[in-house]
Amino acid sequence: MKVYKGASASPGLVLGQVSRLESASGEHDSAIAVLHTSVEHNNESIARIQREMEDTENRAGSLQSQVDAQLERIGQINQESAALAQELDGLLAKARELTDTAAGAARTAESLRAEEALLLSAAADGKAELSAGKDRRVVQHLLDGLQSGSDSLLHG
Image 1 (cartoon, rainbow, N blue to C red):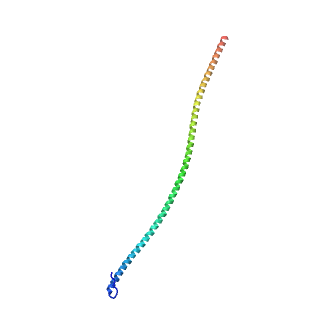
Image 2: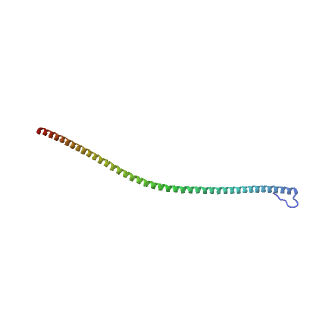
Image 3: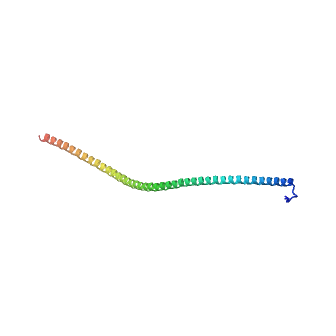
């Protein structure tokens, strides 16, 4: 753009230049306003992103607290499980002892049943012998009685 100085500049040229300068100034003002709007928008975006980051950090902190609580609970469950496993081992040992004791008692009972059977058999044999001996005495007594009766008949 040419700028004319001095007396030779016509008022139309000066007005044209002023108009062009004002137009350029308006374009610059517009560009500045757009840049200001863009900066404000960017600042709002930055503030929104910062709030979102803070919210995310808060949620992450909350989630970390939940994870920590769950890990603590897992530790408690592991301790309880270990205690129960130890108690179960003790109960199983007692059960094995009782099983061994019961097996010994069953063997003793079987032995006593066998002994009882032998004693019952011996008692039956003894009873039979006693019965046979008593029968012989009765027969002998009868025979003796008959013999005495026949002697008294013969002698009498």
